[in-house]
Length: 309
Image (cartoon, rainbow, N blue to C red; front, side, top):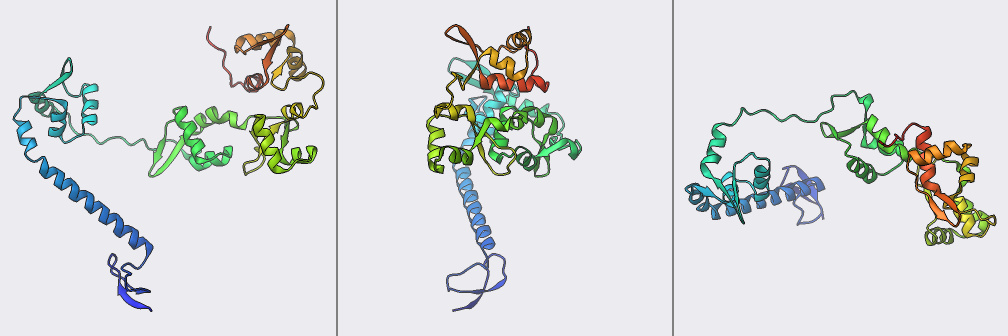
């Protein structure tokens, strides 16, 4: 049955399909609910304020206050008041197990208060060509929003606000996200499909195999969707195809010199300058492949600075 009713929130007339319908749309339902919850919280706050109405006058007559009493007098929380104390915005005297604030110091603080100035908003003052939005970073490096925010927080990359939009400096993003676009030799990596075809395995068997043996993986940056690539050397080693004693995790110095066309002196310089870890295996000193490959990529692109002596 269709009934013509009036929306209890916006006042518009609408056709209701039941007697219990009170709103014309989901938007009105949500808005009315939020208003109801807001009024409920305001009512609770008023009740709490009435409970403490006798407390404030009593505190205001005391000459010396505890942080809790001073916080009540100022109308702020205890944690906020302790932040005021730690920043020396409010004078206090600390005793063992007790902190005392003089009420006259609180009053004097407002007598000598500087002129109010509007807080500066950290808005973008750079041209848009020098900034990246979160969506720009996600698209450029093929990563999710959570990964972008996590890395920006980890490296303390400042946020730049323009209204409700958040931007980051292109220079800092290029600096701290460069490793996500690191070049790699595609011939050194298998895709899942290539492993399935070469070793006659199902998709489930491949995923189980690479997880069981902790095969190193990277993202295939040539594809828009997430597509992992797995180390060919590690897969072949676990499948018994490496019969020449090659270690998939460690380089010998001869292997490094051949792969990167380095002399003995050049290799020694890189190992010492960047403090590359060396592992003793029998009579040989071997170098972790991933660590050395990362150092060489950054070294050749000028992204690794010499450590201070």
